[in-house]
Image (tube, rainbow, N blue to C red):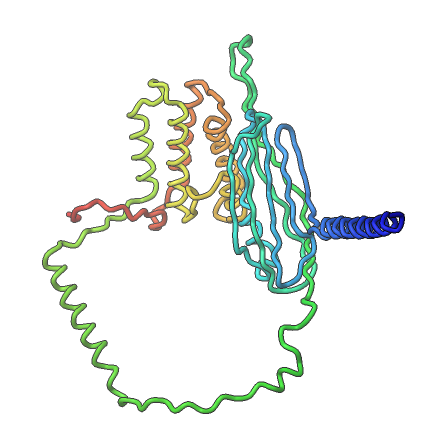
Length: 364
């Protein structure tokens, strides 16, 4: 009986020791996996009620791997935020041909649990060359809302637009550990056997199909010209187009009907459309910051004209985006300023500033 008890104890001890070794090994593997998780790097900038974080994961990659760039913006509801395109910043980087964006996603103005708004932009980058990269920082513009002083009985000064920009972020791209093709494998590549090409039909066989196609096209064009009268395109000078738009806007009496913000939107669109037609600048497709930065380097715009456009567009943006409520006299002065700007910058008989506007009828 004693011998049986000793044998059972000895076997149970070995089983217990084996179990401890197994579980200890699992714990060690788990710890090693955690330590091997990809590490990242981030850059954060904050100003007032707005914060921005630019992060890269992982910080070091190989050529066969990809890196994820993430731009996260968190702001209070009191701020009007305009994120700048980080994809455009990557496209203007000096190393823009050394990598490419293969995937992207975005979330804009999503409410958070603590009552704020969050923007997320993610880009997955694939690199074609190894080396140390310094990717550009992310940036945004915002306007912090200011409460109007009711006791004073007058509108406060419009808030200024502020900028938040993060530092640049580094990423290291390593060469692959092994080349895709070993040098000794190159010697094993053999040339393929020659392939006999089909016999050519002759030097003139290809003329028939193009001639037949050209003949069919000529017949179709002749039929269309006989059935449909051609539409005449009458060039209208850019300043005449802008004057018509401003006159139509005044006739709608938007200010007296209480549509102040819509009035400012329309005035801003007319001036941008005039600049596009007069100076061949894609103003309606740009943000205010992009448009002002573009004309700052254009020698056709003098310092005085650029400053005037800056003040004009800033006044419109305060009403459109920052909730500023101007007096009626200010709005009337604004449209007079727009008309004066058009008259002072109109073409001087050189044919410039023409807008190809369709009238839908013949010229008589």
